[in-house]
Length: 482
Image 1 (tube, rainbow, N blue to C red):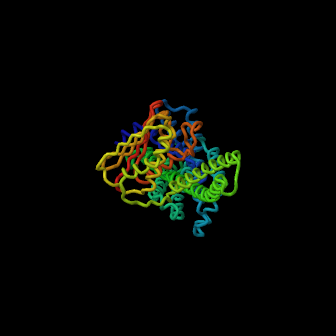
Image 2 (cartoon, rainbow, N blue to C red):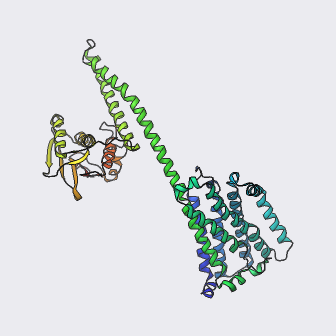
Image 3 (tube, helix red, strand yellow):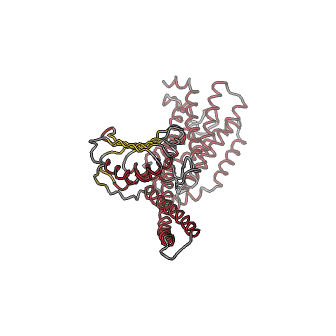
């Protein structure tokens, strides 16, 4: 088995490089700059290590396939060195992240790992390589000794220490096993990639080389390095999940604060607007003294605008409560068919004025529903208002109530209005979305509120429509709420 792997190292190098390169890509694809976790601030070093070292392994693969050359060897050595500089710098900074919480001895060691440490390591490699025969070979070995090995060790210990001192913040994300796996894998990688060098590369630890390792284990060192790379990549990508969760949590908090703000502002607006409306009504009706026709017309326009503002504020309040999860549900058992009939009776005059034909089809024997009667009434009224508004005079509206699947209740309201294009089917339930805003008044919040109320009742709502042939809005509700 070992001999087979040794003779097919190109596949091993490819997987090895792919694991690290993928890790680098995923790190840079995450927006972590605003995270509360300080680890986010140094992940870029690990990302660059992953990208560059992945390329290095692919260059090693190329050397096996195409054959070695002085030029390719120089390029490989340069890429390898740069990658290990990033690994060392990541490990150095990672080890120091929690140094203020370390015991005295460990803190003192962490304080010694200043930015100059990296420069000292690189300078030492240069001096040793220049004063030894075989510059490239010596450079390769000492790059591993002074950058890869300590970089891997510092990174591995860094994962253990970081989780230990940040456990309270990290525990909710359930990432302990990933930090442990990353720590162990980096320590193993430090030995495999930092101490076990090619026998011909000028290493001083002559008993630690690829050939000796193979003679003892019977499996090439590169296989274990590849396994470490895969585990490190898997662990880091899993750890990045804390930043995704953090972003989602922050967005939810921002959305809740926004909803609370809208609710508070809307509430403050509603009371004075209601007072203005009532005052305008008193003056318009002549209860505060006689007014002429022109004055009455101006006051009526102001009254209508005030009523429109009150509707907008009311809708904003309703929507803010739904979005913040603060809607109070008063569930009761009632007959849906009776509620629909009651609402339609209240709209009889309005339907008649517009000369609309109303068709009602309520299936018998449906039984009662357990829900918030006022909120379901609000849903039906909003849908009916929409149907009346968008149906031209002489058109027709059809209301149907029937049994749905799995003991659900299905409500449909159809109109003969202008219809809605398919590309708007999803958008019409968005806030302030109006397909024909230039012709019809409205807040653009009605269907958003409808959708919110239906979903609060664990139901679903959708539209079926065709341009020029009207629209049908359908919602399904479970008859009992869990």
